[in-house]
Amino acid sequence: MQVIDTAEKLAMFSEHWSPKIVASLNDYHVKLVKLQGHFTWHCHQDTDELFMVLKGRMNISLRDREVVLQPGQLFVVAKGVEHRPWSEEECSALLLEPAGVVNTGDAGGAQTAANDVWI
Image 1: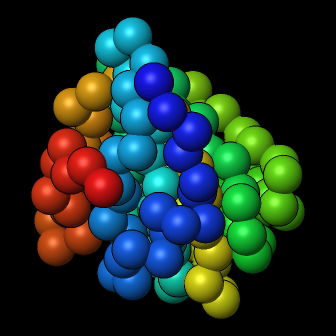
Image 2: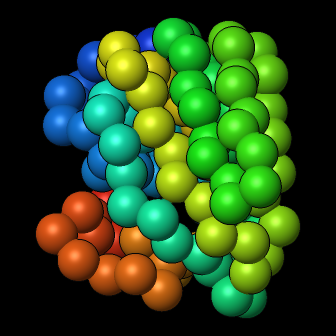
């Protein structure tokens, strides 16, 4: 058990769309991610996904609406809901999801990040 400084952890990497694990909670991973540009449309059939903006502004496109998140705001995408996160400028976010979840869900492709990378 230790204090985790999210700003310090975020300074340890620069790549976008590559979540890094900073803590575990039961069977869940707490991840930090930097994003910029558009991610792929995807869904996670078996789990919800929590996004919390730490810095910048993040959009989450859903098939029926657009969600805009500012620092300190969070949004939960329900399992099975297709979504596409994106940000015009670099944004930092915290993710909470079950261990082993692949960032591109059912879509796969070039934006699939290495899974279970700790920093």
